Image: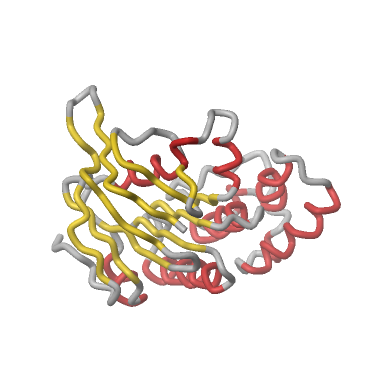
Length: 229
C-alpha cells in the first residue's frame, strides 16, 4: 500500500536532511502511529506522501506505483485517494457542518443527489447527525474534529493521514476521536496517525514508527511509544 524505498529528503535552504534513507512498508488496512520529537521528519513524511515536495533520492510507492512519476496534472488524483485530518481543523466558518463536509464532494464534481445521500451517513458515523445545521463556532473542539474526519472520509479515501488529530483536545475527547479513527480503519481504510500523544499510543497498542533526526529508528508492532520525552 505505502512503501518508502531508501527515501532521503534534503532542503537546500539549510542544507539539512529531513529524512535520511528511510525504508518502510505499510500494508493495506493497517493502523499505524508515527511518532518522534519536533523536527524528527514527521511533517516531511506527510508532505512527501501528498507530493507537496519531492524526494531527493529514493522512491515512494502507493499501491505499487511510484508517485514520483506522476505529472503535475495527475497529483490531484493522487490526493483524492488520501484523506487528511489536521490539528487546526481548517473548517470554513461561513458554512454549516453539512456544507463543510459536502464541499469536499462538490470540488470533485459529485452531484447534489450523491452529496445528499453520503453526507448524512458520514456525519452519523462520527456522531454528529444532531449538529448537521450548526456552524463551526457553535461546536466544541472535539465536535469540530469530528467534522474534519467526516470531510476527510466522505470521498472514500484508501489512506487517511491524521496530523496531530488530538493535539488541541482533552484526554477523554482525544480517546473518542481515536476510536472513530479506529472504526474508519475497521471499514478498510489505511490510517496513519502522526502524534505526540503517548497515552493514546500506549492504549491503542498499534504499530508504531519512530523517527529521530530524520531516521527511522524503531518499527514496533507491539505499540511501544519509541522514545522518551
